[in-house]
Image (cartoon, one colour):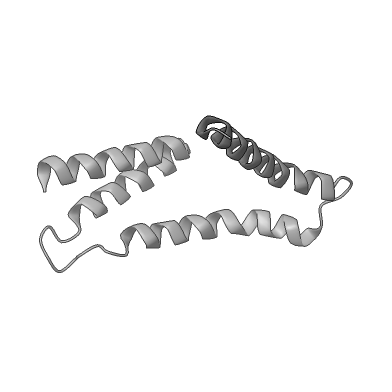
Length: 107
């Protein structure tokens, strides 16, 4: 099998697995979603966001220059935009852009 054919088979298998994982909950819970699954759907997104925030800020050096200023400014921008616009994509993009500009040009 050629490299192109091999790559096509790999992509097809990955696509099939992804589709199966996406459709599986709908096939399992056709009639009624259990309370526990609904509870996880309510609780997990904020918990995952919290874990991502901790992961992103874990290596921030607050005792060395610039004392975590780029991270702090970016977090303030993200919180402000999220509270104002309620648009996660806008908040994440603006925070990332702010951080990158701070690191590259200011600090």
